[in-house]
Image (cartoon, rainbow, N blue to C red; front, side):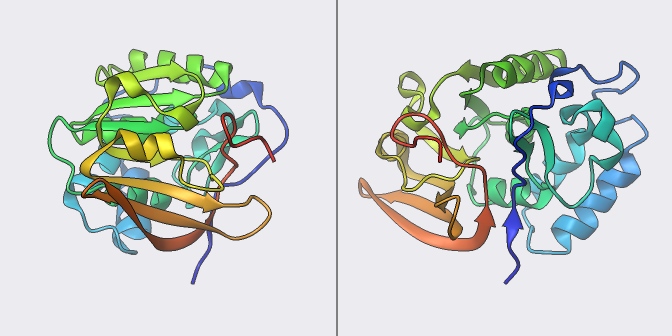
Length: 244
């Protein structure tokens, strides 16, 4: 079974906060259409991504706008890329898989994301018609993502700087929750904020040992979990998840 991973780099890359070159369009008509379609065809449809809404969202979000300028040529590679501060933009397949795991996600669904990063996952969720509430604990990344998403007119994405372990209670309950960093356990506040019948995609495990992408479903007020695939994510920090 393949191990899909999120690359961990210790060096801070200040270029991650630099705005993308102005010639890049926001509507996908930017010269990357071929690379984007190849990503969808080979990396997503060629595996197990079959949800047509997810595939269309991945086609519509210009991934090159969410990577540092010096990595634009690698934006559609089948791998994670560094965005600074020891964080990454996830491999396209992982973004699509975590999004697909939330299905069925109705139009106008309320979705919580823990770990905004560059804002790419939030943008994909927004293209599904979701109202997205995303939390980033690293101030510079939160500010950069908020400016980027606002500049690209993602008006249904709301960015908050803070500790995602505790969720965003005032906007709960959520139809879906995506956690983009590995926790040692499923945070109880997130289970509480998940709507009855809702789904959460979260990597669980130690940074030094095995991690698994878990699907959490809330039924009759209780959470059930199942393992999806082995993964490797950066650790969730803050709250009861100290940096390891």
